[in-house]
Image (tube, rainbow, N blue to C red; front, side):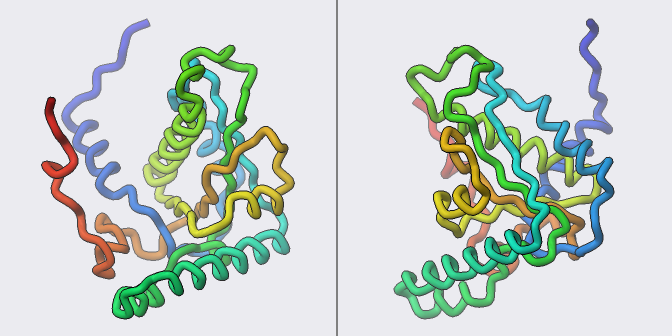
Amino acid sequence: MTAPLFDAGFIGQLDELFRWRRDVRHFASDPIPEAVVETLLSSVRWAPSVGNAQPWRFVRLRSSALRRRLAEHVDAESRAAAARLTDAARRDRYATLKLHGLRKAPEIIAAFHDDDPVAGHGLGRATMPQTLRDSTVIAIHTLCLAAHGRGYGLGWVSILDPDAVAAMLDAPPHWSFVALLCLGRPLAPSAVPELERREWQAREPLADRVVER
């Protein structure tokens, strides 16, 4: 098997994909063709995982009632999070942020990891079991890049109670919740994160994030 050669044009486009891969909150409600959803989900097969365990488990929401319950739950948790902010100006700014697209995005997907998958036979996770979750996060990022490369966007909803969401979705007890994802076509694509545009948090210098020993 011969490894492919990626030319400068491809590398430039890949860098652009990284730059434009944003967490999306504002979605068009147009449905995504089923073949596209299947293609995007199948892209996670190429994600690396500890011991090749492939621990990710995805739940696609088909129920409008469940979607409503999830949106109401996230809204309640968001109000509680806002109430915990002690800085009044920061609290007011928080109230202006759109923090999820659960009511608009055409696809809602919950990501879990299997706590003890048969695949992989335990390799690489005996001393660091959290690598199962790490592997699932990498799979989500792979899904995100695959979506953005095709003109779709992914939003990661994190203001929620993981146990409550797992119970709503009737997840098996040996699955651990990782993420609630909104998938659809962005209304206003941008290379600048929305939280940066809204002056919540600017990009930090890379030099402050890399050290040497």
